[in-house]
Structure formats: structure tokens, C-alpha cells
Length: 325
Image (cartoon, rainbow, N blue to C red; front, side, top):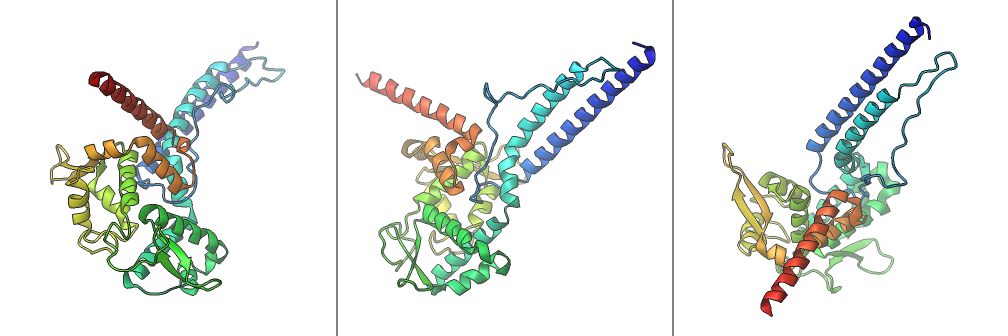
């Protein structure tokens, strides 16, 4: 091959490799930035479509080396380097994919607003009309009103055990009933009226998704979606800080500790020993999947950790049985 053509091929290889490296680095940086800004809990109702690791039939195909009759030279090394960098970028972006979709979901904000509105109506014991619900959803999303209402009702049922029912057949006025189908009356802070098991599972889910360690700010940010703010009495949980520190921490469902090395003191929550006894990471993951309208395997990293936790529990149970004999 003439020297002029060889130099052109080498220059083309270098340009391709530099472009691939630049794009991969930019993709990884963008994914990392979005992961830091991501929400702490999948509340969008949209399935988090995390891409699983490619199986035997899903392996990325190698880019074929392109050549022209006049060149007769391929550049497999540059394509191999680009493929490796692209795979690293893809792995970095998977962690933020679900959160990005949740933030981009325009209905998610309407669902959150509708949940807060319904809880406010419940606290004031005011009638709930379809006209008021439509105003919260907004004229722009009027056609999506049934989907927004369905998501909001599903969330309230899973977290608080509340169901929204029509007062009379074919009416446009609604009221809350509990799991037994009884109208909500009296003190809603009583566990017999509105059980808080769902809210506890949600908090355990937040901690699980945050790497088994959620800061106090992250916990309050999640609770704020349901109108639960420190210092403000809530219709269902009562005084929120008492609910966290007395009902959950003192009863050993959660552990509360100071973060080491924090200048101004900062605190975080972890699972308590009672939570490990009464539930498991797999059960909590199934709860998260229900809220997200998907399946546990949609969270591949959490699913693998939950499987390891189940294996550890089974081994400890077997060891305890052997020791008892």
C-alpha cells in the first residue's frame, strides 16, 4: 500500500479512538451526575428498566471493521477499545436510568400532589369530589386523570392501607375506608385504624436502596412526599419525630446513629435487629416493586443482594436447628 494511504488510515484510526474515548467519558460523567441528583425512592409508578447484564444471546456484537476496496485495511484495535469504554459507560449509566425516568415522568409530580391533597382532605375530614381531584391533576393532564388517580390510590393503599371508595354508586364524591372496608373514623394514629406496616416497609426500602444506610435528610425527604414533616403533626403518624424515634428506633426496627467524622453532627438510619427478624430484604424489595408497578428483578443489584441475604438467613436457620439437636 502506498505510504500516503497508510498514513491516512492511521490518522483515521486515531480520530475514531479519540472520539470514542471522549464520548464514553462524557457519558460516564453525565450518568454519575444524574445518579447523585436521583430521587431516593421509586415513586413514579414507572417500571425501572435497568438493563441486565448481557446473557449468551445478548452479548454486544463487535463492530465490524469497515474497509473500502482502495484501502483494504481494517482497524479492529480501535473498535475493541471503543467497545470496552462503551460498556463501562453503560454500566455507569444503568444506576441512574430508573431515577432519570422517574424525574422525566410528567405524571409523577401530579401523583405526588394528588397524594398530598388526599391526605390533607383526610386530615380535615372534608368530602373529596371528582371536580377537586381534576383541579389538582390540571387541565393539561385531564386525559391522564384515571392513570394519575390509580397511581395515587395504589400508593396510599400500599403505604397506609387506605382505599378510596365512592360514597354511593355512580357518585362523584369519595371517602377513605380501611382494609376491612370500614369508614375511617376516630383517631387515625391508632394502628388498629390505619396500620403503619406499609410505611415501615417503605422506610426500610429507602435505607436498602441507599446502600443500607440512609441519612436523616434522605429519610425526611422521602416522608415529605406524604406530608410528613418534623414538628408538624400528621393525620396518620402523629408527631413525626416521635414516630421515628419512639415507635421505630426504640422498638428496634431502625437504628439511629451519628455519622463518623461529621463536622456539624449528622445522623443516619439503618435497619434494626427487629427488622431483620420480622422481614427480609427480599420482602422489602417485593414491596418496592409493587409501588413501582414492576417486579423485583427490575432492580438487578438489589435483587442480587436480597438473594444473598436469603441464603444467609437459610444458613443461619439451618445452623440454629443443628445446634438445638
